[in-house]
Structure formats: structure tokens, C-alpha cells
Image (cartoon, rainbow, N blue to C red; front, side):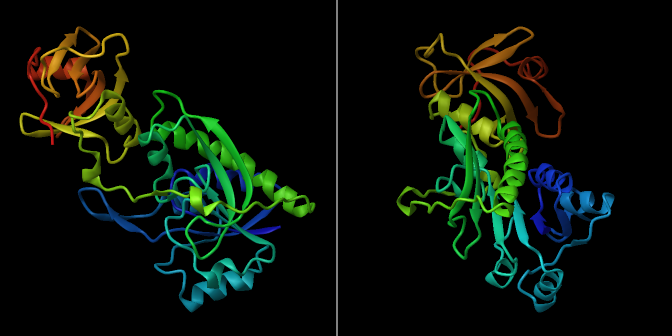
Length: 315
């Protein structure tokens, strides 16, 4: 079967690799255009474009999918399937109606929950105990098509968005090949989503990750996990942005009486910093001060001479 693949992020790569290792043929990879990146603002290709070029796959990176030349390019290939995995843009009807069999959306959530741009981060931020991968029909409405397959997995207590994304990509890579085979032998099933159960994951932006120490410790812990590696949960110290990269909940000590949220309650030698929240203590493990390398929280404490009673700025 001929497949046109759409993707743009790290999540896309294991799924594309799985398709290349299958009996199916990827006849075109479509990704997002080159964008300015880094301090130098030089144009850089998406990871999917670089992978496609390295593996000698035909690749296109159009600014818009709706332009006639792109539609005609896909149409001429006569694909049996479209497979869309973290492409980052809506695929128009003029494209998703072209395959002979189906257009498949590989979405890292248990649809209809967490439709939209940041399903992995939203699942962690909301404290979900499980998530998964769904394979759905592509329609004009965002992530709302009938489900062809779905598999769930537990979310680890300390698992961050990067780790969970990597796991879900591997799950999705196996599930998509299985789903394609079920289509080919006529054993595919279809289940409608319940719109009353739908929720939506907003697009991430940098400032949404600022820590409010007036929140409970579990919420801030989820925030740190959800926003790693980008945009990274952050607070302020001596007027500089401090990224909080890794934390742990302290379950044996609920609070340190009399401390204002954001106050350092303990500096543990060679280990961590404990910080008071609105409800409970949070252990800081790894951090990164603006303009500095990533370091342990204890290294930060030594370098900045932090002591009990010092405070991080809150919102």
C-alpha cells in the first residue's frame, strides 16, 4: 500500500520508521517549512525533513497544504493511506479525501480527551493517571473522527512530557502498522467519539509555565513534568529566570508551619532543595539559572549561597 506521511516533530520519527520497516511504501513525506531557530535566527529544517533527506525519501515542506500544486502532487501519487503524526497543522479536506482507503490521525491521547495541540502536556498537567494513543479518521473538525484503534498506558508519577512522548511514539509506531494490516484484510472496526466527553489541549506558550508557589505541591510537580523540555517551568531568583527541570513530591512531610510559599525550608547536601508551596513541600532536583548550564539544585544553592528562609519569587 502507498502512504503519504505528514509529520514535523520528534514524535513523528518512530512512526515513520515503523512504516518504512513495514510492507507498505512511503511515497512522500510532507512536513512544515523551514523556520528561523536559535539566537542566530538561521533557517532550520524540521527533524522530519532532515530524516527524510537522510533516508532518501521524497519530501515536501509547503507553507500551505491548500495550494493547488500540493493537492495535485498528492493526487498524482494515488495514495492508499495518509498517515498524520504530529504534523502541527490542520490537513484540509482537499487533501484528506484523496487516499483510496483512509486518512489516519495518530494522536497521543485517549480521544475524545485532550484533542488539540498539547495532549501529552495536558494529561500530565491535569494529573491523569493514564493516557494512550488513538488512531482516528481525519475530518474537518479537530481530532474528532471515528476511532479505528486505541491503546492506553499508565503515566508514571515522575514521568515528564519528553519521556512520555517517546513512549507514546513507540506505542503509536506499532499500533499504526497493526491498524494498516487490519484495513488490508478487511477486519478494521470503527467507533464514534462521544463529543460530550471531549476536552481540548491548548497550544503551549512560554509564560504559561511560570510557577505560582501558592499552588499545591502536586500541581507544581505536574507543571514541571508537563513543561519539560519546553517551555520549562520557571520561577525567579535574584531577578533572573530559573528553570525548574526536575522535582519530587515529599510525601512524609506535608508542610513547614509558618513559611510563606516559595520559601526554602531545607538545603540537603549533595542532593536537593526543599521549597514550601501552598500545601506541602516540593523537592527541587535539577534546575537551570538564566545564562548558566543545567545543574543540580544543591549546586545552585552553593553557587548562590542559598539558605533556609530564602525565597523564590512567585507570580
